[in-house]
Length: 215
Image (cartoon, rainbow, N blue to C red):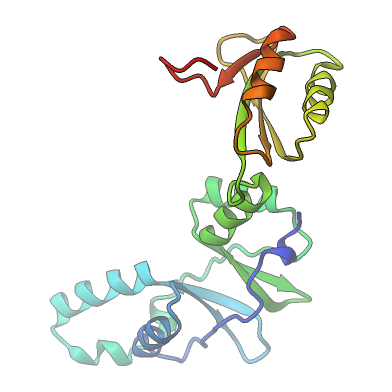
């Protein structure tokens, strides 16, 4: 999945000469928390967030006791060293950028112009869609030997039960370096028959595995 598939294209932006009050008003009217700051050519020159605004107002009012702070241009408060992305960036790479740089939004630029924005909420929703967690489904976690063909064997067994696979995630096994944890989400509300079949074929099902419940 690439960024242009999840980014918001209708971006609300302001200029460096717009005021802190303009940013407050726009955030309240549009229910947004991030505003890219652009110049006359739509180049991204800054960014201001609701966190920046909240930090600016109390400190300025306390130190100066001057309500005209609301009329101060955004260029005085905006973040100027802005990290940007491209519409063709992979969503996984963007997620890494969010994590490593500790940011909550990413203006998306193409040809030097602002064309969209991605927020942490967009990334979270993309993850939910990719995993199929928003659909009626069940999740089965299995410990598999890290060798060729084991996952194919599991999928063949699931196919026998006419269950559609929504997603497959692979995690390292913290208890055994020679195996992996496979999390499979299937479009089936009661996967008992699949779980039973998996165990009868020697697969170690980790979830569901509720104490006191015979699966």
